[in-house]
Length: 556
Image 1: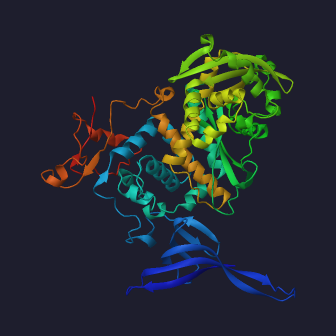
Image 2 (image 1 turned 135 degrees about the horizontal axis):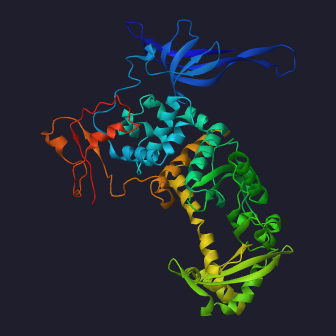
Image 3 (image 1 turned 90 degrees about the vertical axis):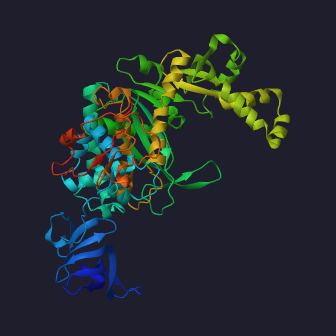
């Protein structure tokens, strides 16, 4: 049976709570270790409730500022949690929903909210939740992550100093610092499915073929937390093992936008993983994936048997491009031996992104299946990396012991690679198709570095999923205001350089308030009717524009 355990409760002269903490305790029966029938009961802490805001006389119900759930009401009789609204009489005059600061940064939050509204993204986010508080909490995380700009300040501090604090009035700002409850909500499968369904439907109205051709890749998510449910024992070469989980993304090749993600325990990649992702996307979103660009980790016998040349020419067949692994069963070295004499032939030379390539297409048999092998040599990479390798004295000694044939291979090794495909194309066009995978690498880098996905620091499968979902969602907002495929539906004015826009209180004659906060020369400014922006649907009409100065920077 659960009950509320109160600690160090202090009341003022009027009987109001000044300080104190509480936790949810329950009595559990523990049998004796000697195996006798008689046992004993003990009290176990199930969850910390945090600071006490309000407590009933019988101490069976209360309002708490939980370190994991934020402002929440807990009832021991029903053993459940409920939301607390800002107008609740029990929390009035306690400063839990303080008035926003009079001096806040305006432009960054306005830019983010305006951009995601105009491209239809805001409407999708609103449909994820039935609660206004949950919706505003998601907006706080998106605005906070996209406007952090390297700041080390916690999310609650950034929102307090932002224009968003005027809009997100249903969220206790203090609860944003440790937001386990939010990640639990975001980690549910229903939220993930609702988002991707709405997003894909919106994109299909603009691009009917959205999601048909995709890049598929994974990135490791190393995590030192013990008992992470997604971590699995993985091998790293032949002499070490460790626990790991991977994040798999499926990204549309035309727009560069993700259409699905999945967490994979361990570090093993094979066609079974790809098949499961294909089935999930088809069952959930109704999208039949027809074209794939894959990493070498997915290449195996089963994949080659499914994606052979006959599959590509068949009506409705699926196409594939993947990097050939340099291991047993694949003619990697044979293709090198058969092509090395042509490396200097200008007939097979072309340039991409400032690099000089050799490329040739050959038809080969892999696992008794006919398939095309595209042989490439990046001459710039081969020469640079070989020269760097050779500068080491240890490597020079090793190089001297090699045969002439081995020396030649070592000079080409770092620039030589082979692509497998069931499509017959020119080598330069095939390389362009494969290098489109850089889109997914950019997404991984954005999530892991700028949006701070790592470290995960979550303990349950739901919160791990929620952390990844909440961190991935802003990546949809980042390209939606700038990528070419979305500009027709998101005509956000490119002429605006919203460097910083400040709301400044006080009199305009005051030197401290009339000074431009950006300490560098301003671009030429033009008058703007900024009050017309009050009609934006995401700005509440009750917002009072009582500030005296608004600074807008405009670039011609």
